[in-house]
Image (cartoon, rainbow, N blue to C red; front, side, top):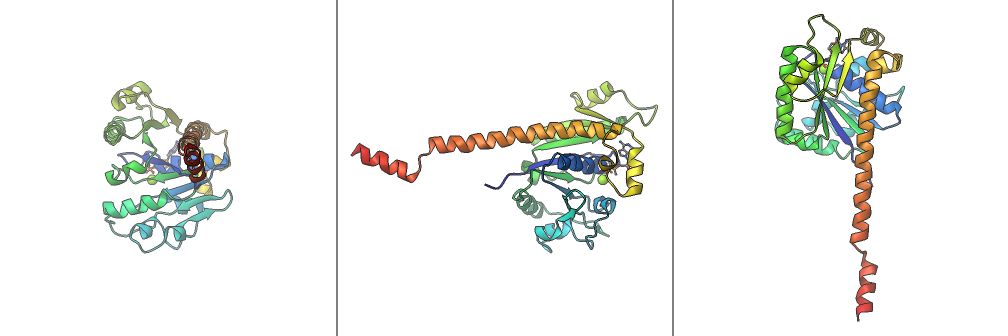
Length: 269
Ligand code: ADP
Ligand code: MG
C-alpha cells in the first residue's frame, strides 16, 4: 500500500519571520533521519528555496501545476547531495490568482505522492480553507515581538476553526534587546510555545554558501532546535503509521474474505 504523506504547513501571518529557513532545515533534518521528504515552495511572489539550494528548474514549479500547465511529476526536483525532493515556487512577475478548486486539485495530487513527509513553505497570511483538511500539523512561526505574536494568535484561531493541530515556534530569539519574553508571546498566542529557535549566525553563512545550515553544522544552536522539531514530527509520523497499520489489521480481522465467507456459509448448510 502506498504510504500516506504527513503534510506539515509552515505558516505565519507576518512575513520575514523565518518560515523558509525553518521549512528547509526541518526538511533536511528529517531527510537525514532517513525519511523520504518533499519540500514544496508555495510562496510564488518571493520563491527562494530552489535558488538557496542551487536547483536549476527553468522557472518551472508549483504554480505551473496549480494552473494545469505541468504535471506534478515534472516539477519535482532532487537536491542531490541528500536526495531531498523539492517543488520550486516558480517565480511570477505578477500576482497569481489561485482559485480554491485549483488548489484543491493540487493538494489532492500532492497527498497521493509517496513520501513520509511533505513540508509546505508558504507566503505570509492565512491558508485557503478549501485545502485545510490535507494538513496534519501547522507550525506557526513568530518572532518575539508584539506584531508577529498578534499574527500568530489570529493564525491559531484560524487553525482552531478548521480543527487543525498547531504549535507555536518562536524564532530569532535573542536578536533584539526589545524581544518579548517567552511567556508574553505565549500569553498572546493563548498556549505554551512548542519551541524557541535562537538567532544564529549560521543562517547568514548558510545563505552565502548555498547550503542548508543543517548540513554545515548540526551542533549549531539553530540546528539543535531544528533537531528537536524533527524528533517531534518523527514521533508523530510513527504514531500515525502505527495507527494506519492497526486499522488495516482490524479491517482484516473484522472483514472476512470471500473464501472465508463461503466456508462459513457451507458449514452452515
Ligand atoms: P520568511 O520565509 O518567513 O519570510 P525567512 O526564512 O526568509 O522568512 O527569514 C527572514 C530572514 O531572517 C532571512 O534573512 C533569514 O536568513 C533570517 N533568519 C531566519 N531565521 C533566523 C535565525 N534563527 N537566525 C538568524 N537569521 C535568521
Ligand atoms: Mg519565505
